[in-house]
Length: 246
Image (cartoon, rainbow, N blue to C red; front, side, top):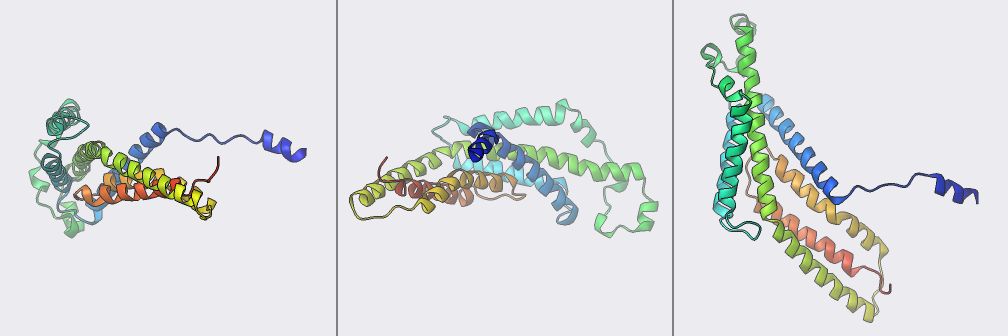
């Protein structure tokens, strides 16, 4: 009796819905991609600065233009992508006034190699100009990372039929294996069922986070296609290990 009262008094765990998980995944991916880009500007490619994220944006737009001429989601995805990018560029660069700030020349610090700076260089440099030159690389790279994030998100949306097809094939394959086990002498495995069921959604979300957060350009098929195959395998394992009798 006491144990039942404790179980009833304990608060029930509320699992977040799928849309909330998707939004949370996207926010985490965007924040992570910005942090990774800032770290790489500081330690990996300080000479390139914001030009690296700008080049990544151009490469990702090239992948989108070359590989997604037609889609089941939208008839002209390239035109839609160009309109969205122009809209983002207008609001992120022009409306905020950042474009005018970035166009302000800082000639006397533009040729400084920050890897080789010493105290004598710092004393002869205007601190305000130096800070402006150093900070605006992070600001501009952040804006380009946001545009890259939107381009990759569009690619994920356009490739969503691949995940649906892989999930459908995995479901059919799993149900066939379940019927073979049901009418044969196969044994149930609750361990396989529960672990495969828990891995279905994380497999898709982890692939999204990895693809959206990469600080360099990569063909989307190298990440999304294996993720779709693994997604279908998890659904197949879940369906095949479902209990024989309801």
